[in-house]
Length: 226
Image 1: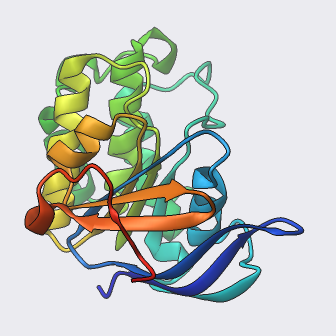
Image 2: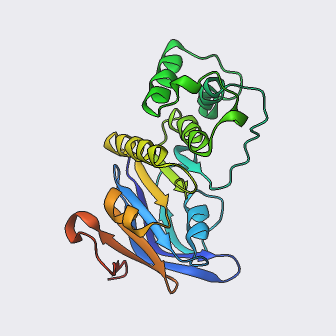
């Protein structure tokens, strides 16, 4: 796992919205991405996961199939008649193709993950009966069973309870300890500085970066072009 590396990256649609001089997400590193509305967070995320082509520069890293993406607004149909357990287990189809047989290890991994995310007591529940926090934990569980090299999450903590936030943060830490690169879009600056290794902040069309282990909680991150 080598992480994601950006060099002279320009992202946008017809015209550049954001320029990144040089920045990286190392293997096992958790990066928080913040910025005002319209600063380019979603545009940068879509570029990193391969949904949008860069306007210039380079973005290198894992094959797109090795990047797990949790969008803020998912397209999942919560009325589909499956249980939480069945839906999370189906995440294994992501890399194997639909209707592949599940192994004993798949079932064991699913049970273990649901336990860590506090969802074992909701295994048999239909998706539409979950609270907001339970649903977000379920979405993350389905992503994690696929064992990606990199995770990109867009506002995963919006409108969820404190327990769900704590459990999700713990799973992101576990994924990072296993070598996974993590990028998480946030609005909460205090959470970015408290729970992540590096803080990226978008401002005036540039990406600013601070290593939180070295600088603590800076008021103004240093420019990534420095």
